[in-house]
Amino acid sequence: VARLQLPHSPNKSLAAPAGFSPKPEFVTPPYRIPPKALYTIVVSVARLEPRTYPLDSFPGRYQAAWVARTPVANFPDVVEAAVSPDPAGGSDLILYSHSIYGYSDFGTNAVRVKRWLGAIAAKVAEGGS
Image (cartoon, rainbow, N blue to C red):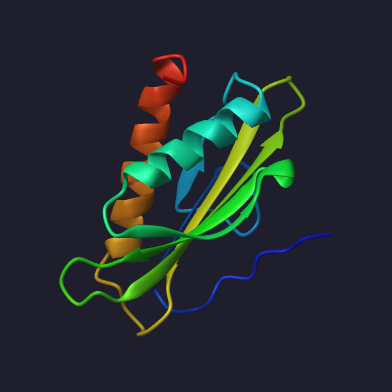
């Protein structure tokens, strides 16, 4: 069983479905589209992000990771996404952004996760375009 253990430092942000452990900072809604469609949307949102580069991709498992560089100091953060089917026939999303260096990120990862979630929601509402 896969398990996510968060560091004690504040330089991370987790978005996940309600009831996820560890408790996420942002709760993702149940998406009423198939996992493949949601994964495609997440990847398209990542491609539009400035200073964000592919790190790893497992399309068959609907998982991917990117390196996102901060605008001022160019610090690397890692953004990881995992999409899975939910019991109602839709999809669940886990989105985790964390810093590689330093103890604090001054809220950068939370801002990024919130922005990605907003962009994903907008694309889902548009029908994935």
